[in-house]
Amino acid sequence: MFRIGHGFDVHAFEPGRPLIIGGIEIPHDMGLRGHSDADVLLHTMADAILGALALGDIGKFFPDTDEAYKDMDSKVLLAEVVDMMEEKGYRVGNIDAVIMAEKPKFRPHIDDMREVSAALLKTDAGNVNIKATTTEKLGFTGRGEGIASEAVVLLEKMEES
Ligand SMILES: Nc1ccn([C@@H]2O[C@H](COP(=O)(O)O)[C@@H](O)[C@H]2O)c(=O)n1
Ligand SMILES: C[C@@]1(CO)OP(=O)(O)OP(=O)(O)OC[C@H]1O
Image (cartoon, rainbow, N blue to C red; front, side, top):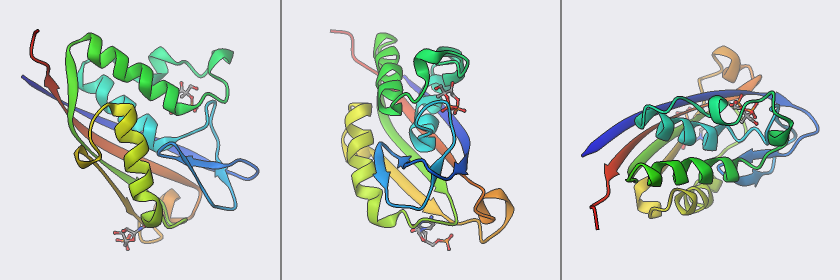
């Protein structure tokens, strides 16, 4: 049995913060604003999994009003969502994600992001695709105001043992 999920997230740029995307720090002159480390890519992956399981979204489990999640490492957040997925008896079949940003260039970092996220998702990097695109200078991403990300995931029911 298969279930499909979709995730979408946006964070605004903020000077003076590190840029954390896909669980790694990307060299850039500013980072993203957020209650957590604002890892927009890992948030979309977590939301896609929660969506596939009809469990809601990350804000339901990690509210941005809770001081416990202030500056949270989003790798921890995704790992907790993967635990929920396993409790429901599912594993990741494959995931396909896109980062929308005018800058910086993500291509040199994509394989590192795939390795880190695949480990968190408990799957092979061959099941994790991460793409990047500009929005051709259009919209808030095009003006360099922030970064958006989107992901689609297919979950597979694990065999009963
Ligand atoms: N922030 C970004 C945006 C794009 N890329 C890579 O460049 C390619 C061309 O981008 P277009 O928006 O002109 O289609 C794209 O396919 C990515 O490989 C990137 O690394 N970082
Ligand atoms: C991750 C959480 C919690 O720290 O905070 P943010 O980093 O602001 O991220 P967002 O994607 O806006 O929503 C989920 C939040 O509850």
